[in-house]
Image (spheres, rainbow, N blue to C red):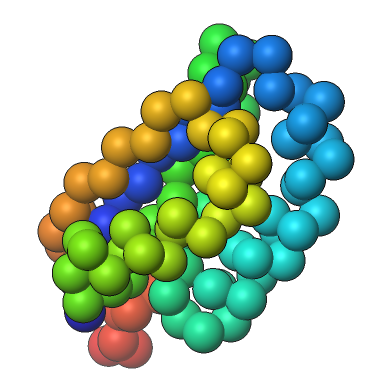
Length: 99
């Protein structure tokens, strides 16, 4: 599997719509997390960035795009910009072996 860092920047003026769609968006992400496709995700904490970071696992970028195109935020046009970058993880506390 290959790791990908995906950043979302929400579309301008989409706050109310995101609040409405958020429950199904969270369900979508929860299901991906439980399948092992999504490793970690969450919104940026600083008020100057209206978006999120998601770390995904997929066989290829094309496979990942097929998955994340189903995100209700994306389906409902709430993502203004989405960037996908392959990410080479060097250190991962969740994968570290006991000494």
